Length: 420
Image 1 (tube, rainbow, N blue to C red):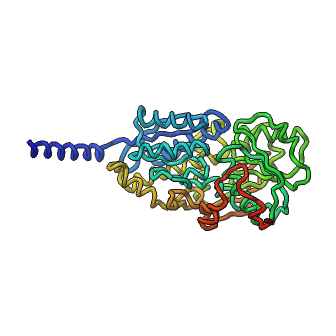
Image 2 (cartoon, rainbow, N blue to C red):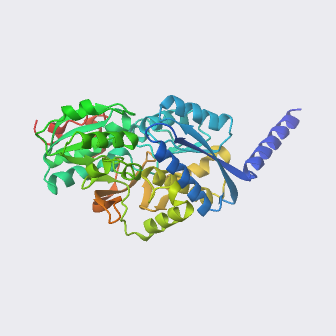
Image 3 (tube, rainbow, N blue to C red):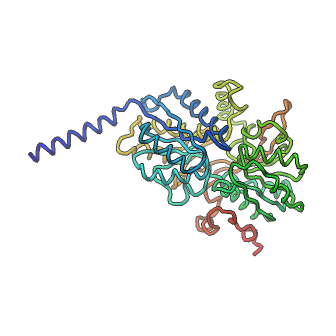
């Protein structure tokens, strides 16, 4: 009887292993915000997932690739609920997403409850997602918000000559993270942050904040995006304000550059930073933009891919590349697939992306200024770049940790500048 039971168990194991190897279809779950301030960016994320899959003929590792979209509203509770649906009801093998900062932190924790599945970040950029107790099955092939902000501060201080700034940023994890990257660079260069204003995500009325902005500053750093940025800029113009603006990464994205109204007038000449530039001469970038433009009707897309679209495209590309490398093998809790992801040196439209020990991207940051094109549209023109930007912004791990996690009060600008 014992020999029979042992033989039965061995046979069952072989059958299970064979079934895993014989899986003919791999299912992706696309977790993306399609409601709220970043709905337009989320829609572009879905377009770019579709583009990456089309370019791969909906195949990877010899397996057919299918996908299902799970819409969120940028709130962590909704995100986890939709992620659970993807796993339990839709039976996906891999989740690509989420989009927003606090969603990413929530998905880091959810990923720990599904160790035999893989989560590849969409475009969310909160530092803590991969910095604080990271999940071994969560991979982020986009730079985090602090990395995106790096290089902008020293540019506005040294090149623009803006020494004193006030800041307005979104009062949540990504807003803190993106601001930290700018502030570290700006304050170390010698800059002074006079006053900080924090606004809720999804705000529509900025009149009070605009009225309270100090006059004795060289520029205002604006760390909001999507409809929040459009609303702020329109109201800023209506108020007749003329102080120079510095843009957080998502303030001068295609979702804002293509907006109607007076927002455009305020943006011209604004320096920003992030993972992309519209005039990037790299053939890989030009080929990506051309493929995007040809894939979708002009009325159903942006002139060039948005930051959100680029993030989801890159994440999907990472999944497909790693699946090719392991022959579509998701057996043994996706161990081979996850090992391949961790070791990827991914060729992307914005250069090579590699991951650190936290499975967090290291890559290039572009410093841009918003310019008006002959047809009246706006674009980001490259004025500088920083390569191989890591998660600690060039500091030692100990030095970076000593600053504390991004928050309303972190970093301490005076301390970074050596003023106390």
